[in-house]
Image (tube, rainbow, N blue to C red; front, side, top):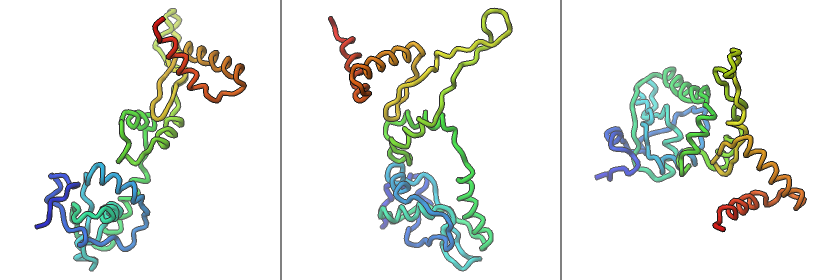
Length: 220
């Protein structure tokens, strides 16, 4: 009796087939990141079935149309089974499925600010396809609004008021980013200027700020 696969959820188990019975698509133009997919399978398990053509009309039995690299990653991990949904189409339809499965991913985009926010809230990035460095780059590329538009300036002129101190800057370390006000920016600039004047370098400025904050927080 074949043991129950540990990384296939109960809902997909009825779709599980021996992984060795399947063959990759014979002309797949797509290259995939097998290590990242393998990491996702290890952390998240198989959360969707791959698509396999029965081959009645192509003569190529059990050919994978969508999920070729998931199959390869699962084989690399030593899986014995994988969940499959079946189609039975001719060569033209099979090629269209392979191409559109890849092309729709190419055409998709991201709300970079929202993506950065979601990734920043995940304590462990394993299984996301991102690491700390890539999240930091994403945060660097995500610009903050310069001003916040309000409905009225409060003076009865009909003009819109702007408040530029609510999002004047931010502090960032690893994947964390904290918004700071204009007053905080001015205070940091003063501390930074004095530090550079005293040391002729900005090396160690972060540690200096942390020490200053710790000393201010100590009881007298």
